[in-house]
Each structure stands twice: as structure tokens, then as C-alpha cells.
Length: 158
Image (cartoon, rainbow, N blue to C red):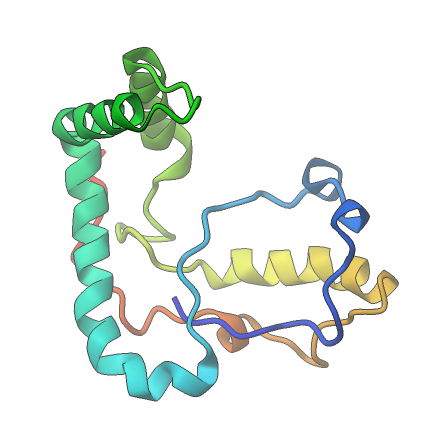
């Protein structure tokens, strides 16, 4: 769950981003970045935190009712105009279970598939290069992702 900035230069203008569907890039949730320079300092915390996050995700998928009821109640109390219904909450859980929250290349939740990370690098490198924001030369999956803090005994049971 550790990554570092892979591009050089300033960020692109908001409208200057490629269509992920057209590129073949599958968008996934942000794993929670940590700057490489801070990795050693944060390692004791990450060794404890990452398995807690893994277990929380597994527990939520197994029994989402109490959390969903809490979120629905908060939406109602805050009354910000955001609409979230029990049906939408149930749909979200179904989609998470079927499409989004899955184990990595083994039976572990939350680990990186380095082949998939490499595919992402291969897809986005020409895009960023064309925007004059090339990734660092020779960028490899281990430069932007690690499974060091992942507990391999925790996974979604199918």
C-alpha cells in the first residue's frame, strides 16, 4: 500500500484526462498512499493498520446491515441533499461483492498483483508522456506498490 509520485511535472488540467474505458485502464479504489520517504517511519503503524483495514472490509462485506443502517441514518440527519436509500446500499454491497472487493492473485484481500500494476504502467506511460508528464524512467511495480504490510491470511471467502 505504499506508492510514490510516478510522474514528473505539474498535474494536468481537469479536462485533459484520458477516458479510462478507451485506454483499457480498470479504475480501482485508492489503496491509501504513503510517500516512499515516510515508509520506514510509518512501518510500525502500517504493520498494525493494514490488517485491521483488511479485516474491516471482510467483516463489512459479510455483515453490512449495521453499517449501512448507520450511514443511512447519518444521511437523513445531515440532510445535505445527498440521496442514499436502503436499495442503493444493498446494490452497492452486491456490486462490491461481485465486482470490486476481491482477493489479489491469491486468496488475500488487499494485495497488489504486480502484473496488473505493470499493465497500468504500460497503459498510462504513453498518456502521461504525451502530456509532457512522463513517469520516471524505468518505473517498475515495486516502485509504486508493496505487499509488505498485507496479512496474507486475510481474504474474502467466496
